[in-house]
Length: 77
Image 1 (cartoon, rainbow, N blue to C red):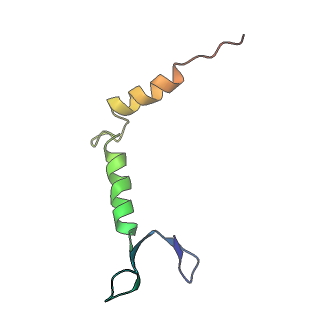
Image 2: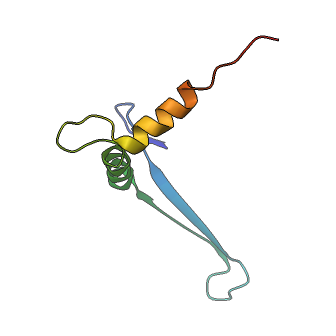
């Protein structure tokens, strides 16, 4: 994460390639880019996959996942 002047954080992907043995470069190549749009799209898709688009209620998969965790009752020894 990078931090902007106002204190907001920005998701950032950084890639480092070792080209020390390449005589043309003889060093490391570092590149990076902002992935905030990618992250927002991924979160929207994750949310859309677990909710009904018409009612915005949890769909069957989301209910099954939630109920499987809730249905486990622990008994005291």
